[in-house]
Amino acid sequence: MDQKLHNLKTQAWAQINSADSVAELEQLRINYLGRNGELNKIAEDLKNLDSNQKALVGRIFNDTKNALENLILEKIQEIRGEEKKGWFDPTVPGIEPILGNLHLVTQAIEEISGIFQKIGFVRVRYPEVEWDWFAFEALNMPKDHPARDEWETFFVDHPEDKKYGKMVLTPHTSSGQPREMQRVKVPPIRMINIAKCYRRQSDNTHVPMFHQFEGLVIDKGINITHLKGTIDFFAKQFYGEKAVSRIRPFHFMFTEPSFEVDFSCVHCDGKGCRFCKSGWHEVGGAGMVHPNVLKAGGIDPTEYSGFAFGWGVERAQLLKPGIEIDDLRTLYSTDLRHLRQF
Ligand code: FA5
Image (cartoon, rainbow, N blue to C red; front, top):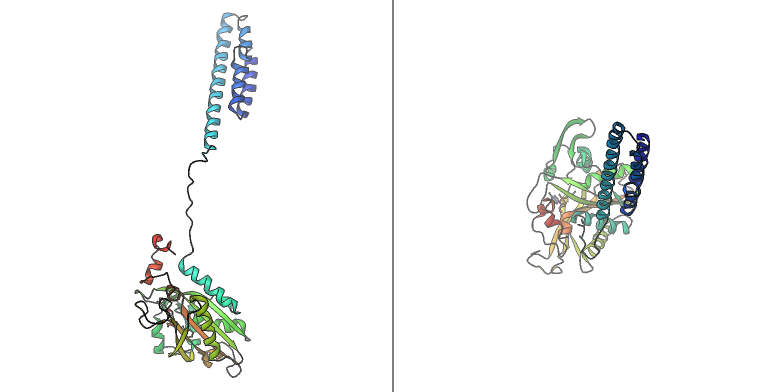
């Protein structure tokens, strides 16, 4: 009889465990533990046992009954818990997920690359950790030349290379010029290099890490009108149809002639306002590529000529209407309240 009880328990146990609704469990309770259930049928036979056996089997009978009752109870609680988890009230207002947005500088980089890609420029990116040779020497700035001071460079504590010299954090994207010449080898070149640059500078118009976008065009017969046309195209695409550009004479070792590039103020259409004072904003430098730079890049200056420009992404972006940030450093302060505005 104890074998009968054992078999019944095993069978009930399996059925209860595989039940997946409360109704099914209620039915199992009736089948096994109800007045006319399987257990009570076995209980009938208890009467025929002698008193010693009755005590022993009676204990097994009670243990089985209690075990099955508890198991059914546990299983009902488990199923009710799951039903509750899966239950939702469609009338309760939803929780709006927090959506991130691209950083202002990333937005600018995407827009700038799109504008130049429209006129056939190829987007490239060259190393941030760079050799002195690419950042200075190939750009016509020999070792110890005072012109290098302008770039307030960070040097990396690394053994010098015989040909390329010290390791630096590139202070400008112009280091991409000789790299692109060496990559392409035979012009035409239409490069737009957008990358991080580093200088030991920090005030409200300078950050130690910033971005520049560098254009380089090299082909036969390239002259200043191509440079000016490209700058004007960019001004109108980036700041709107009314925007105009101007170039002013300047000096860079790697371009001859060299210019500083200004864009008309979008707040006052170049008339002069509190924001711009003069009607213009300076964004960077430009010029015709110096023959020594072409030579360093392996290009014959008697056959080819080119222009280059290098502007600050942050500064260009902050001149747009609706972005009145008077301290450039806030862009990198990682304050989300500030960054989510744009
Ligand atoms: C240059 O870096 C030249 N390589 C530009 C160039 C390229 C000239 C090709 C000719 C031909 P400059 O040091 O003026 O030039 O920097 C260009 C622009 O980068 C600046 O006008 C400014 O917009 C941005 N810039 C420079 N330093 C910082 C800084 N610390 N923080 C933010 N923006 C900066």
